Image (cartoon, rainbow, N blue to C red; front, top):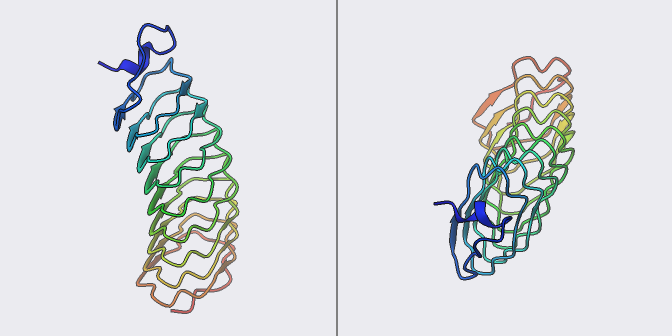
Length: 195
Protein backbone atom coordinates (compact mmCIF):
# COMPACT_ATOMS: atom_id res chain seq x y z
CA UNK A 1 0.00 0.00 0.00
CA UNK A 2 1.23 3.48 -0.84
CA UNK A 3 0.31 5.48 2.26
CA UNK A 4 1.29 8.77 0.64
CA UNK A 5 -1.70 8.54 -1.68
CA UNK A 6 -3.96 9.16 1.34
CA UNK A 7 -2.25 12.32 2.64
CA UNK A 8 -4.35 14.78 0.71
CA UNK A 9 -7.60 13.29 1.96
CA UNK A 10 -6.39 13.39 5.56
CA UNK A 11 -7.20 9.72 6.10
CA UNK A 12 -3.74 8.79 7.30
CA UNK A 13 -0.62 10.47 8.60
CA UNK A 14 2.89 9.33 7.89
CA UNK A 15 5.30 8.27 10.62
CA UNK A 16 7.91 11.01 11.00
CA UNK A 17 10.50 8.37 11.94
CA UNK A 18 10.28 6.66 8.54
CA UNK A 19 13.65 6.14 6.78
CA UNK A 20 12.57 4.68 3.41
CA UNK A 21 9.52 5.89 1.46
CA UNK A 22 8.28 4.66 -1.92
CA UNK A 23 5.35 6.67 -3.26
CA UNK A 24 6.04 6.23 -6.96
CA UNK A 25 3.18 7.11 -9.35
CA UNK A 26 0.94 8.54 -6.65
CA UNK A 27 -0.37 11.01 -9.18
CA UNK A 28 -2.54 13.08 -6.78
CA UNK A 29 0.21 13.87 -4.28
CA UNK A 30 1.16 17.56 -4.47
CA UNK A 31 3.72 17.82 -1.64
CA UNK A 32 5.91 15.67 0.57
CA UNK A 33 6.24 16.97 4.15
CA UNK A 34 9.39 17.37 6.16
CA UNK A 35 10.61 13.93 7.23
CA UNK A 36 13.62 14.40 9.50
CA UNK A 37 14.90 10.79 9.42
CA UNK A 38 14.18 9.91 5.79
CA UNK A 39 17.21 8.49 3.92
CA UNK A 40 15.67 7.14 0.71
CA UNK A 41 12.75 8.57 -1.28
CA UNK A 42 11.21 7.15 -4.45
CA UNK A 43 8.58 9.55 -5.74
CA UNK A 44 9.01 9.16 -9.49
CA UNK A 45 5.91 9.60 -11.62
CA UNK A 46 4.16 11.81 -9.05
CA UNK A 47 2.94 14.12 -11.80
CA UNK A 48 1.13 16.57 -9.45
CA UNK A 49 4.05 16.95 -7.04
CA UNK A 50 5.10 20.61 -6.85
CA UNK A 51 7.33 20.72 -3.76
CA UNK A 52 9.67 18.76 -1.55
CA UNK A 53 10.32 19.77 2.06
CA UNK A 54 13.65 19.81 3.87
CA UNK A 55 14.93 16.31 4.54
CA UNK A 56 18.29 16.72 6.28
CA UNK A 57 19.27 13.01 6.23
CA UNK A 58 18.10 12.12 2.71
CA UNK A 59 20.78 10.24 0.74
CA UNK A 60 18.89 8.95 -2.32
CA UNK A 61 16.13 10.78 -4.25
CA UNK A 62 14.40 9.39 -7.34
CA UNK A 63 11.93 12.02 -8.48
CA UNK A 64 11.96 11.42 -12.23
CA UNK A 65 8.82 12.26 -14.25
CA UNK A 66 7.59 14.70 -11.59
CA UNK A 67 6.54 17.08 -14.33
CA UNK A 68 5.18 19.83 -12.02
CA UNK A 69 8.27 19.97 -9.78
CA UNK A 70 10.05 23.29 -10.43
CA UNK A 71 12.75 23.18 -7.73
CA UNK A 72 14.61 20.86 -5.41
CA UNK A 73 15.51 22.06 -1.90
CA UNK A 74 19.02 21.96 -0.53
CA UNK A 75 19.55 18.40 0.72
CA UNK A 76 22.89 18.42 2.55
CA UNK A 77 23.43 14.63 2.68
CA UNK A 78 22.12 13.69 -0.76
CA UNK A 79 24.45 11.37 -2.71
CA UNK A 80 22.26 10.17 -5.59
CA UNK A 81 19.69 12.31 -7.45
CA UNK A 82 17.59 11.15 -10.40
CA UNK A 83 15.32 13.93 -11.63
CA UNK A 84 15.08 12.86 -15.28
CA UNK A 85 12.03 14.09 -17.22
CA UNK A 86 11.23 16.76 -14.60
CA UNK A 87 10.32 19.14 -17.39
CA UNK A 88 9.46 22.12 -15.13
CA UNK A 89 12.69 21.93 -13.12
CA UNK A 90 14.68 25.16 -13.55
CA UNK A 91 17.50 24.80 -11.01
CA UNK A 92 19.43 22.34 -8.88
CA UNK A 93 21.15 23.67 -5.74
CA UNK A 94 24.77 22.98 -4.82
CA UNK A 95 24.86 19.76 -2.85
CA UNK A 96 28.31 19.07 -1.46
CA UNK A 97 27.92 15.30 -1.04
CA UNK A 98 26.23 14.54 -4.36
CA UNK A 99 28.00 11.74 -6.28
CA UNK A 100 25.53 10.89 -9.07
CA UNK A 101 23.16 13.20 -10.95
CA UNK A 102 20.73 12.21 -13.69
CA UNK A 103 18.75 15.11 -15.12
CA UNK A 104 17.98 13.76 -18.61
CA UNK A 105 15.22 15.65 -20.45
CA UNK A 106 15.03 18.47 -17.89
CA UNK A 107 14.26 20.86 -20.72
CA UNK A 108 13.80 23.97 -18.50
CA UNK A 109 17.16 23.54 -16.75
CA UNK A 110 19.65 26.25 -17.78
CA UNK A 111 22.54 25.87 -15.32
CA UNK A 112 24.23 23.22 -13.25
CA UNK A 113 26.29 24.40 -10.26
CA UNK A 114 29.81 23.08 -9.76
CA UNK A 115 29.66 20.27 -7.22
CA UNK A 116 32.89 19.14 -5.62
CA UNK A 117 32.11 15.42 -5.12
CA UNK A 118 30.09 14.66 -8.26
CA UNK A 119 31.51 11.72 -10.25
CA UNK A 120 28.70 10.78 -12.70
CA UNK A 121 26.61 13.36 -14.58
CA UNK A 122 23.88 12.39 -17.04
CA UNK A 123 22.07 15.26 -18.75
CA UNK A 124 21.00 14.01 -22.19
CA UNK A 125 18.53 16.26 -24.02
CA UNK A 126 18.68 19.17 -21.56
CA UNK A 127 18.03 21.52 -24.45
CA UNK A 128 18.38 24.79 -22.49
CA UNK A 129 21.59 23.86 -20.63
CA UNK A 130 24.37 26.20 -21.83
CA UNK A 131 27.49 25.16 -19.87
CA UNK A 132 28.88 22.37 -17.74
CA UNK A 133 31.18 23.93 -15.14
CA UNK A 134 34.50 22.50 -13.99
CA UNK A 135 34.05 19.79 -11.39
CA UNK A 136 37.17 18.28 -9.80
CA UNK A 137 36.01 14.66 -9.35
CA UNK A 138 33.72 14.20 -12.34
CA UNK A 139 34.60 10.99 -14.23
CA UNK A 140 31.71 10.49 -16.66
CA UNK A 141 29.44 12.87 -18.58
CA UNK A 142 26.53 12.00 -20.86
CA UNK A 143 25.27 15.23 -22.42
CA UNK A 144 23.99 14.08 -25.81
CA UNK A 145 21.64 16.37 -27.75
CA UNK A 146 22.05 19.33 -25.37
CA UNK A 147 21.48 21.68 -28.26
CA UNK A 148 22.22 24.93 -26.33
CA UNK A 149 25.43 23.68 -24.72
CA UNK A 150 28.38 25.82 -25.84
CA UNK A 151 31.29 24.74 -23.63
CA UNK A 152 32.58 22.06 -21.30
CA UNK A 153 35.18 23.28 -18.80
CA UNK A 154 38.32 21.70 -17.40
CA UNK A 155 37.64 18.30 -15.83
CA UNK A 156 40.86 16.90 -14.32
CA UNK A 157 39.43 13.43 -13.56
CA UNK A 158 37.06 13.01 -16.51
CA UNK A 159 37.51 9.70 -18.34
CA UNK A 160 34.36 9.40 -20.48
CA UNK A 161 32.53 12.12 -22.42
CA UNK A 162 29.55 11.50 -24.70
CA UNK A 163 28.42 14.81 -26.22
CA UNK A 164 27.09 13.77 -29.64
CA UNK A 165 24.45 16.03 -31.16
CA UNK A 166 25.44 19.13 -29.16
CA UNK A 167 25.21 21.39 -32.19
CA UNK A 168 26.13 24.64 -30.39
CA UNK A 169 29.18 23.19 -28.64
CA UNK A 170 32.28 25.11 -29.71
CA UNK A 171 34.85 24.32 -27.03
CA UNK A 172 35.92 21.37 -24.92
CA UNK A 173 38.65 22.48 -22.55
CA UNK A 174 41.64 20.40 -21.46
CA UNK A 175 40.73 16.95 -20.13
CA UNK A 176 44.03 15.18 -19.32
CA UNK A 177 42.62 11.78 -18.26
CA UNK A 178 40.02 11.38 -21.01
CA UNK A 179 39.99 7.86 -22.49
CA UNK A 180 36.66 7.84 -24.35
CA UNK A 181 35.10 10.67 -26.39
CA UNK A 182 32.05 10.67 -28.66
CA UNK A 183 31.26 14.02 -30.28
CA UNK A 184 29.35 12.92 -33.40
CA UNK A 185 27.35 15.75 -34.96
CA UNK A 186 28.88 18.55 -32.88
CA UNK A 187 28.82 20.77 -35.95
CA UNK A 188 30.13 23.94 -34.21
CA UNK A 189 33.07 22.29 -32.45
CA UNK A 190 36.32 24.05 -33.34
CA UNK A 191 38.76 22.09 -31.20
CA UNK A 192 39.27 18.71 -29.59
CA UNK A 193 40.37 18.60 -25.95
CA UNK A 194 44.01 18.18 -25.00
CA UNK A 195 44.39 14.66 -23.61
